Length: 226
Image 1 (spheres, rainbow, N blue to C red):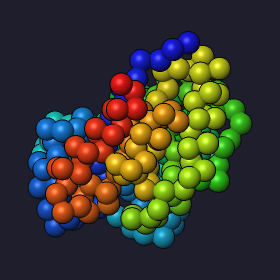
Image 2: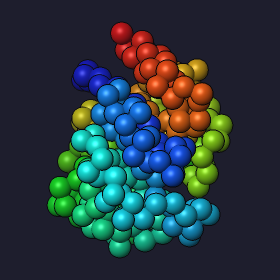
Image 3: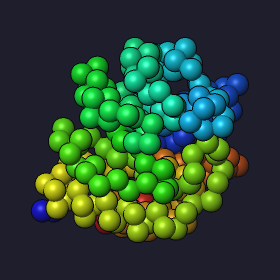
C-alpha cells in the first residue's frame, strides 16, 4: 500500500537560546508546522530541561503545534500536566512506560497525538499492537540526554525496518519521526529511509542563520520525495 508523504521539519527548542524562546518561535514560525520540545527529568536522562510552566508560557506565543517529547522516568505522571500546558503531540519512551498501551490511550483521551519514542538500541517486537489509532513513532538517532550529538548511521536501517513492519501490519498511517544529528547533509537519506518528521536542533538554531539552515534542510528533505 502506497503512502502519501508529508515531510515536516520540527525545530528543536533544546538548541535555541533559552533566554529568548519566544524569539526562537518567531524566527521560524512561518517555515514550519511544528516545534519540538524536549523534556528531560535528570533520571531517565542526565539533564533537566523544561517544565510544564515553560510550555504553558510558550503556548500563546505560537499557533504552531508543540511536539512534547517526554524523556522522563515516570511518563504517566506528566502526560496531563504537559497536555494542560498546551502540548499537541506527546511522545513517551517505550523503555520508561511500564504499561505502554495504557499510557498512549491516556494521551489520546487527552486530545493529543500519542507517540512511542525508541532509544537507539531499542526495537521492540509487538510495537504495532499499541499503534492501532495511527499516531507516530519517534526514533532516536542519538542517545538521548544531550543536544549536538552526531547522527548514528544505523538509524537509517532501523527507520527502513520500522517502516516495512508498520506497513506490513496495515499501519501505513503511522508517521515516523527522527531526532538527533539531523542536518541538510543527511536529510534526504533519512526521508528515503522512511522518516516523515525531522527534528533538528543544533543544525538549525546553532547555525549563523537559523532561517537559512531550516530552509536548506527542508529543501534537501523534500527533494527526496519529489
